[in-house]
Image 1 (spheres, rainbow, N blue to C red):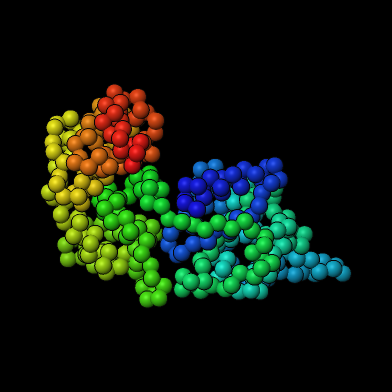
Image 2 (cartoon, rainbow, N blue to C red):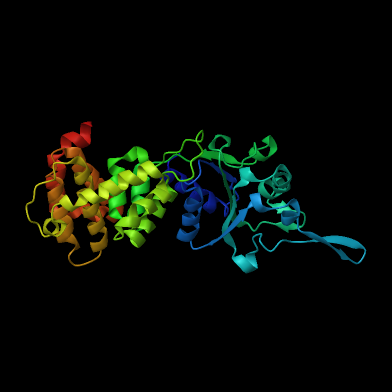
Length: 347
């Protein structure tokens, strides 16, 4: 399931706790693709607590609690890491990450917590959703086969990468436009992991975010930039990204385009992707300003300049996802949509 759809599933499951219809969710996927981040984003959007419990680092007693004597009885001290309405809020998300890396003894301790929402005398507050995530056995991580009794306590979703969803996230989180452009140009590089070779660094949504940070730190250090990019996304991807960035000095004047000057599109396809990403970045940064309608209109005019109409469609689609339906109110949008109607309708 693509990230945008999975986000809606998690949000709906979180909301369903109020009606008593919540089913615990298990997210399956390769390492580094954003499973944990998508859950954190839902919690942040709803301004609720997220308790991230890494079962791979636990002992069975960590969940059950520590026994203590109370007169003639033995009671169990409830672990402070579990959701408590007074301390953490009446609503939130209990996130059981790395659940497939937990030893079977720990998984068994989690059975009752996941299905019955209780452990002994402890009960999960009604407003809390239970979400879990883990790697598949073929991903070369430290994983155990999920026991059938545990698996049967979840609804299961496979996390499938989608470039459009990642690009929308990247623009929202100010990822360097050049990385976005590169992955538009080389979409197969968004995630490239061969478990048979067990690489240390490889392209993934997580490592592309690392490469964004590397550019911020080493962009103007020619001796270190290539090496730091390779350290994030692997040798081959690092070389390609560095070469892509070096070639961007041939870009047309972006500021002139934003002012409405009539400039041709670059002939090279990689530079076309770079121009499109740069313009979407400027559209986002100008959103909400007095100049936004003028800037957005000039970008829409430029979308018709590309030799291939599909490039303009990609640019405008990314703009729409980033700035919303205000785009449709601009007169330039009507002209552009008429010019590309054959692509929009039939391609």
